[in-house]
Image (cartoon, rainbow, N blue to C red; front, side, top):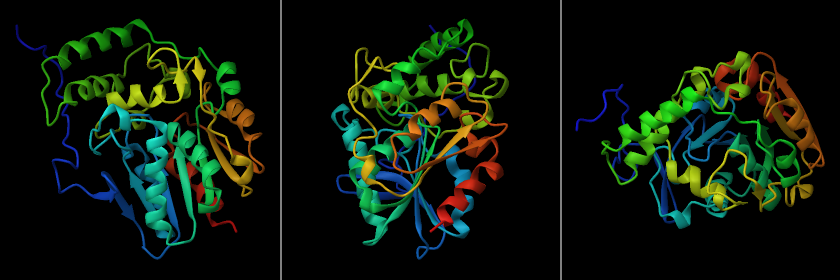
Length: 319
């Protein structure tokens, strides 16, 4: 039997096997990472979404490099960072990696954090644990941060027949896929799922007119095991679901100690994680402000970089 005919989708090598990739060593793990800007400028660390995605779609934020040192990194098990054992694909490990990165760049002072989607959840959890290390925190389109908000917003993802058929084809194609490591087949499957552009996309409600835009598809390499295992570390029930039935972790634990203003960013077109959800979540922080970006959905920095980055820049400049 021959493998199915389909458009080529390349599974890229990680920093583990490609030393030419920009990287940073944080203890026992080496992560794909790069910086833009003057090393003497205030530090801004960008935390990507997923779990399982990478920072490629957030690269428009390097526009901030004229005033800040902007640090990007792929979380362990995702993007071009190494694939690791399941035991290392946890919320706690991701918090520890972010803390190591913060300590590497803060030089005894503080850094600012910009988190998107899952990355915003991670930033919220980090701020609650290390409020003294953070100068400013931007939470762009975070998913539910508590079980209370999660229950109120569950069941809003719907996958249509076209998406499911694409998934079947992607799975079938992945059986023939070999690559640079043992995760190549699974990552190939998830990458093909992540580039589906037809009808019935489960994230249609996240974007204007139900059309998923190109920035949502941008990535170097998806991490299938990270997508499954990281949510398992903070939720109960089935291995992975877009809306976990039970969240065992509160991503706002300790945030009452962070007294600086937190900036929430929402896309006006996002009917799932947009304005109403973020207004519900602002209450957990002593000081929070929301900006809603017109004409964009869940990927504001990619859909309209100029309009979305401007309020972030103003916020980061504030004293």
